[in-house]
Image (cartoon, rainbow, N blue to C red; front, side, top):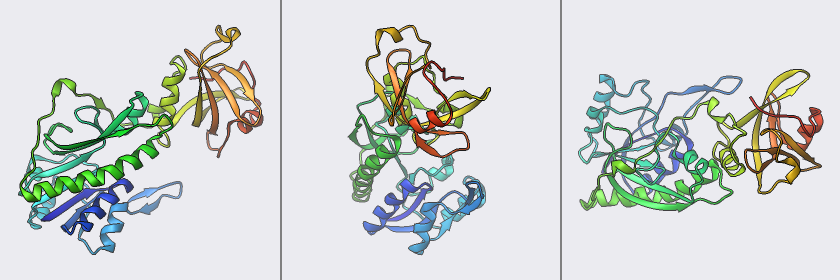
Length: 319
């Protein structure tokens, strides 16, 4: 089939490669424009673009995919199918209807659960024991199209959004290949989603990582894992009379706290453990911070941070 692939981030690269491995005719790759990255604002090409250029596939990088010029360019490719994996723009109905066999999407959740932009993070934060991959036909309503195939993926209690993305990508590549094969054979069967069971995972922003120490230790442990490495869980500490942001990269759940700590305010430093980290009082239980990063500083062991910034037992972290 003549396939248009639409994707941008690094995790989309294996999906494009899998279609090439199947022998599909990738007639064009659509990805987001190059953008400046990092402190030096160096221009960086999307990972999907890099692979497409290596394979001599035409690349399209429209700032607005639904403009007439973009639609005409893609229409001229005469596609049979479009495959979308983390592209980054909302597609118009005209665009969805261009391919003869439709436009399909690989979504990183068991739809209708966790529609939206951050399904992987939401699954970890909410303490789910499993998530999965769904392939579906795209419709105008966000992540609401009929589902073609699904496969479950277990979530380990130590998974972060990075490790879970890796697991889902590996499974997702297989599910995409099965889906495309069924479409090519005319055997694909799509089932409507159950709207009553739907939930939404909103787009994450930097402010999404602010920790509420009133939550229990399990909730905050999941929160730290789910938001690693971006936007990252963070809190505030006071040093030299000023408040500073502290990003938490790694933590461990403390299930039980001594009785004499029960009256401590949430966010209080309960103890400093030499060469290991420092324990924080949560709404219930505690969280042992093991790797942190001060504002403008480097990622470091939490114990080194406490010593270097003269924090001590009884100090309170928070907004």
